[in-house]
Length: 279
Image (tube, rainbow, N blue to C red):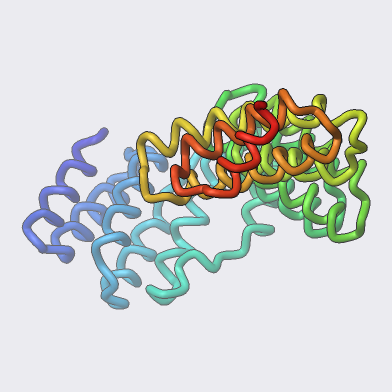
């Protein structure tokens, strides 16, 4: 059943989209091709061809296919793409496909669950959106689903920060790190939140929240030595050196200053202060 895909690919390689469409017309009219196969072949044509006449022929050919119920949403999607203008092919009615698949037996496509999650988020139902994406990621381990989940966590945290709900933002970020413990934006945002609320008595504990981020920045600086990550590390050392000096914690201050000097040999003030507190 994959011969139609092979024929389409060969025609496209020859820069002959007309022959590719003819392959699909022949397959669709035979009454024996599977919907999933003919849809994959049609998508290959759409990627390579923007001719509206050929797209119309393709659409008509696909309407002759009689899919099993669980594939009806996919066939409907591809037919809609054929009927769209080339620049508007991604602009399709997702609600229509949701209606089709809700009446079909079998597993619900993950992409529709993602659509539900985005709808929840736009309705300010952050937790519902996160729960849906957790379900997809938890059941599949898909990295794309994980990336969407992390983006939703971050957007939720940023919304809390915009409303000055800092504790809620911190809780969301801590939860997100259970999904991706090395996510730099989440680590950085959480570290800043923890730093802003700190008192001098808890400064050492807060400094620990930066350690994983510092490890990542250090590793990135070795791979991409364009000064970007070095500047971030220097700024971190300058901040904590000043805070530890103010707190009278000379040992911790000296450690931060030494790290700063290692990264920036021209840091004259840091050298003077380190020399003074080391006497």
